[in-house]
Amino acid sequence: MGRQVIQSASLFFSPTGTTRRIVKSIARGLALRPRDFDLTLPAARERGVTLERDELLLLAFPVYGGRLPQLIRDYFVKLPSGRRPAAAVVVYGNRAYEDALLELFDLCHAKGYDVVAAAAFVGEHSYSQVMGKGRPDPADEERARCFGLAVRQTLLSDSSLTDKPLLNKGARRPYRQYLKKLPFSPETTRRCTKCLTCVRNCPVGAFINGDPRNINHDKCILCAACIKLCPEKAKSFLDDDFCDDMAALASSNLERKEPITFLP
Ligand SMILES: Cc1cc2nc3c(=O)[nH]c(=O)nc-3n(C[C@H](O)[C@H](O)[C@H](O)COP(=O)(O)O)c2cc1C
Image (cartoon, rainbow, N blue to C red; front, side, top):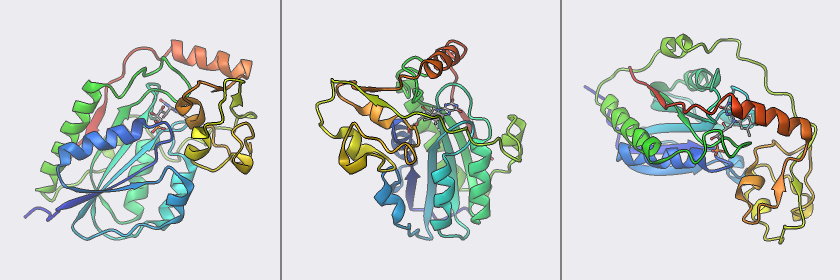
């Protein structure tokens, strides 16, 4: 019989923009009428989402410490429950995606969604200019487009994915603990021209009184959006231990990892 699906709703969170680019490429392959729910800014996450019956739900989120970002897990309570096809996608920084895709699969199941496909793509690491440098690149974007095409084909059948392939990849329940919060936030140098790009793009509204030099550390999720998006390169993490750790992490994760897709 197959499913009657004529449009897709993409739900994504993308502080440094790589997940958004993967979503766009998948949507090209899906070739369904698209609706975007970009959950990156706080105002968008205050709103709920209405979903149509004849809609594929594409969910795409970055990997934080081998898990989904905590605020995305929290956001799931706002999503409507009910049977509908969903595609689960995570984007990671060329280190590892660990439990994140399984966690997304489980969250979809808890909502009653049929996960028809899943994938892990690579994006340049939020904390590095060498891990996953420049990714997604044209090869990744083509893989993402082909994934979209394959998802569309899957919709023509009634099959959906089980958790087995994800568990075979070493993911486990209970999932790993969330990362411990680092005791610092990005620092600002004199290069800052107060253009406010960082303030406008902060996913948690962490800048106090809209001042680009003044970050509320309790709110900051260390997503590095303000660092990566700054046109003057005026922001960075200055903590020596953290910089050493990132350099070591980068040197052991230079080898290119390829996207991986799971279809029924
Ligand atoms: C707090 C935090 C934790 C991260 N943890 C991981 C990780 O465990 N594995 C990995 O490969 N990349 C990790 N990354 C990198 C991001 O998953 C990666 O850069 C992703 O492409 C960012 O997506 P975005 O551009 O849509 O924000 C982490 C990034 C941040 C900010």
